[in-house]
Image (cartoon, rainbow, N blue to C red; front, side, top):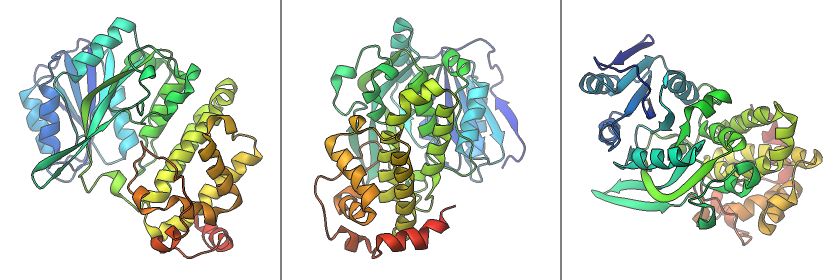
Length: 384
């Protein structure tokens, strides 16, 4: 294990500016790391730099990274003490020299032509960022199970063209990830875009996504799957049911970003509450049953305050979504019943859709038997 921050590189690491810098955050992923690295070093585009940031791994990950760095001069390994995902990603951003920047999670892998295709389009249209569709996958019983995910949820009229998210805020409802695309480094640096660095937190890609979409003028959605996103790693943050308030912390970070500019705040605050609603639904379904009352109390309180502040705009929600938001701020118990259907418990952050039916018995299936008053009085004070 490396205890101090230092850099291990290939012997002939070039100082020239590569076309794409690829940042790989690493923490205890020895099982998947080699397949990830192999997919990156075997890209058809060779003019890349690969920045692996080891966040204090205690397994063999550090040794695997150093071995690969000795074999490929494009690889730079940054070893540092554990400080969390946001700081790890920012270390990679600070080290990047490429014209564009991409991210690969260390338990995922990518298709061989991913960066060649993205870079070609990005250069042709002078894009701030370009994102592609992807596969979620799991290896079950020796078989690879694939699930094709369209960023646009089938809205192909927004694909394969230059868009400005500020003028097309429907794109904020597209799948929220940061790793299936590339970003112009000068755009990132000019706008001082970085990840939230809350230690031990998760979902810090939400803030990066929101910043880039608010600030970008030229965005492209490519309806072709180029990235392979793993869903069978038991150690991934999406599987951690104890991280109850990470999503809250991330959306407070995003709000502070909006508040830095009054014009920006006015332009995006309504969309902000729409996206916060989606991700709070995801969190309410994800966390362990024992934490659901606590999070529901916070969910209620946050949206009640937003309503008082006049920050909830009926126009950005669908009719059903607005009905459910209205139900949330008037009757959290009934809201909970509507959104805990077993079929939706496995919904992911990208595909949250509110139920169209009221399921009276769902609250019983979840094991939660509390009234609204009890939720707010008993659990509200426990929210950190």
